[in-house]
Image (tube, rainbow, N blue to C red):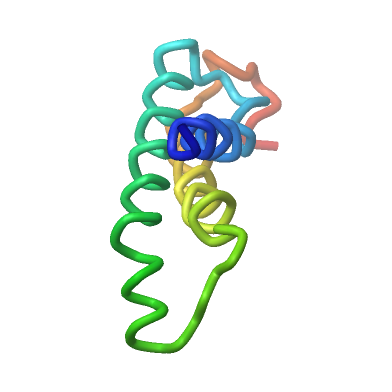
Length: 95
């Protein structure tokens, strides 16, 4: 159950960076689902690896809940901003 809760929060973190852009509902669902999957995979594989190799113990799961989905959301926001043109934002986008 904790994985589902964290995946839901991770989806919100990832979509938050591009929420003011025109991403449409399917884009928000796609970004959120990818971030949720990445978050769960991070808890299963990345956290044990970091603890075993580097001695880094993330007691609250901040890296998998906010760090990795935040980076993913930043990249998603960058892509949507690059794809948006004057037809979406008007003539003020390039000024």
